[in-house]
Image 1: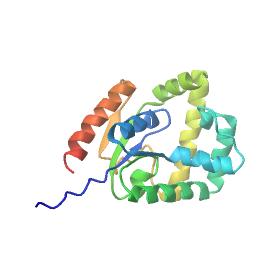
Image 2: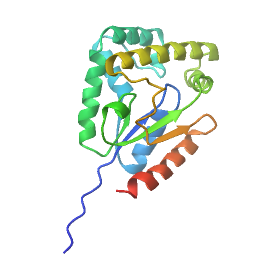
Image 3: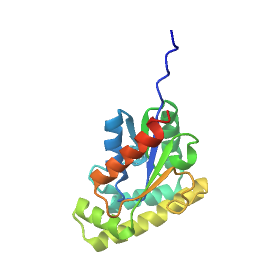
Image 4: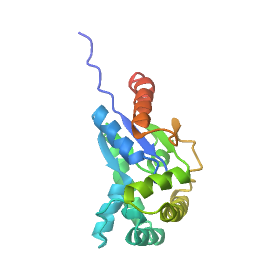
Length: 197
């Protein structure tokens, strides 16, 4: 009798700057492949709640309160370290999709995807999602991008949105719908991850 084949442990990291569509697509991919979905942003929001913030609305990161929490994170890296420790622990169990800015650099294993989108496209998506003006969305994104890059450069030394060395796939989403991005990633995962396993 042939030995039982061990079930493949899948770990996928999806990253990209705010508004690129990573959370939406990562959730759809997790559902399709029966993977657990974990979000670095979601874990940060849970810590924000512990600190007395109320991140209940969509687009909270672009609000005044969300920006205040970002400032607090810049002065105290314990928030980000706690989130990353949790995600690394969860990744060890396998069968997970991680929606995270840091995991592609911190995690030695896994299939890593970067979703690229221009600042204009990202701002337009956020403006539509949060019912704010394009100018306000661009301003909020610019500030968030800059400060987030500073946090991770200081903490871990990598350049978010500039260093693509950890990634297996980089996909430009500017001209693609959510469904097209999803279908493309499924094809890539089937071909490069599932079949290889």
